[in-house]
Amino acid sequence: MAAALTGDGECKWYAQQYRKHLPEADGEDSGQIPQCAFWAVGLEAARTYADASARNPNHISVLMGQTGYAAMRNGEGPMPSTWPSPPPPAGTS
Image (cartoon, rainbow, N blue to C red; front, top):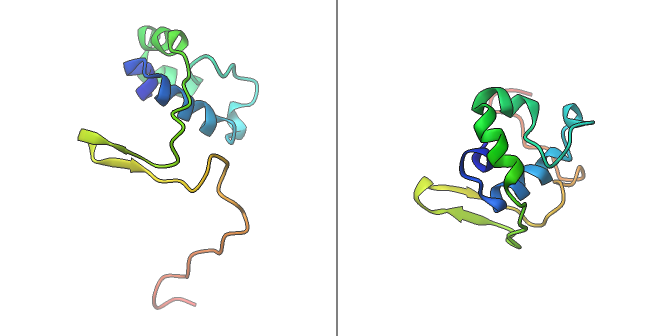
């Protein structure tokens, strides 16, 4: 939704990368806002998203300044399925 609200190309690039891994996005045009986001932001923001050019930021991890959020990755691809599962919560077996 950030790309739709701001027109930021880096946000659109990240959205498109993530979208590739969502089964419910099959058949949707990657250049247009996903249906689920459209209902949250409306027609004007959908146009903003469509007009934005996706731009690879060439970052692996990024700190998003004033928001205090960070996206931390070790590469561009999806998380490997070979990673170990987290341990169960304490007191459970």
